[in-house]
Length: 385
Length: 245
Image (cartoon, rainbow over all chains, first blue to last red):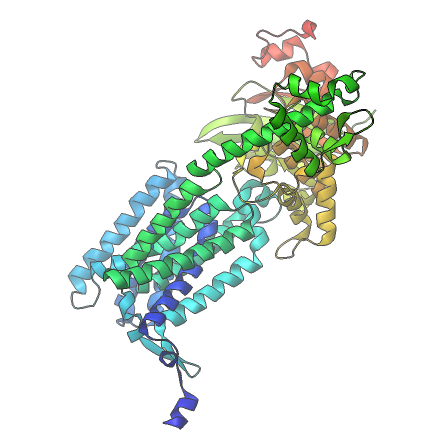
C-alpha cells in the first residue's frame, strides 16, 4: 500500500469531489476568459456561440471515424471542425450576399441540427443527449480519471490544464501583435502583422478550448465563460493587461459563487454559473465608469471639480493683467464668481492644499503656483480655449 | 527643376461589390511634396489610399513606392486612417497607441524596449500631448485622438505619410499643430499625401494637388492644378470660386 502510494499520487487524496469539480471549472474559466478578451475586443463573441454548438457535429463525425467516445482524436477532430465553421462563416459573409451576423445564424444551427439528427439516427445508444450537450456534466468530472506522470486526476482537469497552458503561452508570446491587430487591423496589416494569421490562430485556440470545455460544462456555459468575464473587464479597465487580469478574477468569482450556490440550491452547476456570470456582467453594466450609478456619482464629482477649474481659470486669466491686484483679492474673487464667503474660502483652501494656488501675503491676493499654471494651460486645452 | 516621383500608380482600378469606384488611374506623387487629394463625396479618395497601400483589393494596376512594392518598403510608410475607423473604447492609453508605431521596426514577438518608449514619449511631446500619455484613449477629444495618431506616425519615423482627412472634426489648435508638422516634415525631406476637404485652406496648406472624381481630373503643382475649370470638371465648382481665395 505504501509502495503504491509512492508511485501514484492521487489528486483525490488532496481534494474532495467538490473541490476537484471547482478546480476544473476555475481552470476552464480562466482558459476561456483570456481568449474571450480578444474575442470581445474584436467583436467576435457571437462566433463562440457558433463554435460551441457546431463542434458537436465535429464530435459526431469524429466518432463515426474512431468509434470510441474516449479517443483524444475526437477532441482534435472537433477542434479542426470548429476552425472549419469559422472559415465557412467567413466565406459566406465574403460573398456579401449575407452579413456576418446572418452568416453565423445560418451556419451553426445547420451544423448543430445536423449533429442532433445524426446522433438520433445512427448513434441512439451512444451516451450523448441534448441535456448534456447544453449543460454539460460537471458532476461527472471527478469520476472520469486518468493517470499522467504518476498523478491520477480527472481527465477534464488534465485537458483543461493543457489548454490553459497553450492559451497563456499564445497570449504572452503574441501579446503585442494581438493588441495592435485588435485595435487597428489596417495599421497592423501595414506594419507587417498579418491580421488573418492572428485571427485564425485565435480562432483555432478558441475552437480547441471550446471543445475541451464543452465536454465538462456544456455549450451554454462555454459561451458565458468566453464572453461574460471579458465583457465585464472591458467595461472596467483602461489597459489590456488589466483587462486580462480582471477577466480572470471575474471568471474565478463567477465559477466559485455559481458552484456553491448550485450545491446549496441543488440545481444545475453549469446553469447556475451561467446565471451568476450574467448577473455580475449586469452589475458591471450598472457600476462601470460609464455606467448608470457611476454617472450619477461622477456628475456630482465633476460639478465639484469644474468649480475648482473655474477658480483656477479666474486666477490664471487675471494674473498677468494690470488689474491683477484688484481682481485677485479675496473679496473680488468672491463677488465675481458670486459664491458664498465660506464656499469661496473652502475652495481656495482646497486649491492651496493641492498646491495649485498660493497666498501672496504682501499684496493680499491669491495667485497660481507653477503647478497651478500648468493646470491652467491644461484646462484651456481641455475646454478647447 | 526635375522632380522625383516617390509614389507611382499606374492603371489603378478598384471596385466595391463589382461596382467600379476608381477607373484606370495614374497617379504620381512628387518626392518631398505636401500633396493634397481632393474630390467630391464618393469620389474614391479613401479607396485610392487603401488601394495604394494594399489594404483593399485592386482589379488592375501597379503601385511603386520608392521604386519598390509596398511590402518591401512598409517600414517607411505611415498610414493615418480616419480617426473613427478604430475602436476608441479599446482599453489602452495614448502612450501605448503611439508605441505601436515602434512595432513596425520590432517585428514579431519582440517587446518594445526603453528606447522605444522614449521615442514614443518624444513623439507625444511633439504633438503637445505629453500630459496625456497615461490617459485612456476614450477620454481624449477628437483633436487629441488625431494628435495621438500622428504621434504614432512620428514614432514610426516613416518617410511617407498617408493621411485620411486628418483635419476632419479637429479644433483650430490641432489643425495648426498638424499643418506645422507637415511643413516641418517637408523640411526633413519627407513626403505627405493628405485627403483634404476644405478648399479655403488648400493652397495654404499644400503645394501639390490631386483632383479625383473616380478618375483623376488633374494633378500637379498647386498653382497649376487648382483652377476653376478643374474644380468644375470634378463637380466641385458649385458655390466656390477661385477668385474668392
